[in-house]
Image (cartoon, rainbow, N blue to C red; front, top):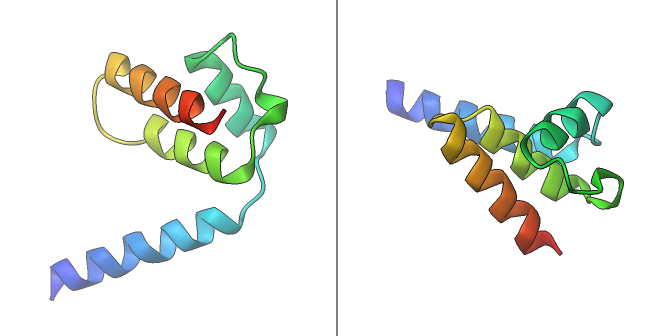
Length: 75
């Protein structure tokens, strides 16, 4: 039962996150992991994926690699 509730919460957060527009805080966080990227050209789905990676688990180097991979695949 707890697993079901956790999965439902993650699904709801994912759907809610996809509806949000990119904030200046999100763009600033992405810029700190990928300084050479022009964040003004990113669509909301890419921003959301990158922000989820930044706030996810893993080391800072793993997060940096993941964010850069997301941004590379977006272009």
